[in-house]
Image (cartoon, rainbow, N blue to C red):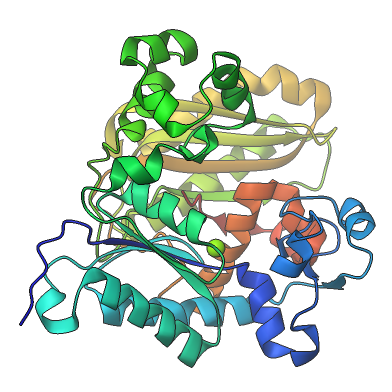
Length: 400
Ligand SMILES: [Mg+2]
């Protein structure tokens, strides 16, 4: 039996244009045509629509101007959740080490599986075949020695591709890529780098760490220096992922409320959040208060405790302190939404950060939350779910 000694065992598997692909799978008339999911804000665009320049998070009007022939369909969350569940089942059959990143994306480490299943490349190819064959969706897989590089590889390999960066070939692969491929490099950072003649990852890799820090600040400079050299020590966290936060929020019906009523709402929210944290075995150090005022502007305040906790009392005390600080603003502008979260979770979490297991509701929440995370809290309200989520106590998560 051939046993590969390659260290390139990390897979980044990412479904292509996920929501749009599900629509094309389920309605043959949409295949080969530009498909846009979501009318108000583009939630997903098929590759045919992307060819016209349509992108996720774009306004619907602009998308229609760019691509007048596009078929615009409303999102069907249950179908996406079901497809995600099926794909993650395949991930878990493929490797015991699966770390979900979002509804359509995960890292897998296949180290040690070679004897049973073949090389990492064989495993990745088999995974793609199985997702296509049994779920009917295209997926791109990047294979490399680090999570960072596997993710870059899948991005480069899209759509419907398999991109392998063999052990030892990292430099050759990275150097010619535009510097925007590095995590954390948005348009602003890219502009600053380009102004200094740094256009490719190779250009960045040739810079001293000090020079990058001087240009971009300590945190980003160091991070970019590490990534440009493919230094990413993070392991694939298998099994049950780490939850980032537990939170709850409540829409208030009045633009102005007496302080006692706001406090009662806060108590109920904290109680619920703390109970959910305890039930899930989570404890967090940071208490976050989210507010939406009467004029629909939003604010968030947070404070970090000395110790991680899931106890109601310290969370409530912290939340009350935060609320007291913004009381004058509330009195001036009114309050239409109040939310509390505990984040900065310790590593002892037992719940999935992702919608893969457990009841449909949670899965749906996470799908919705992913969209909210990317496009803003109001995107989903507008797009599909209506006001009901905003009423009552709507649970929310913050995916990575
Ligand atoms: Mg994807």
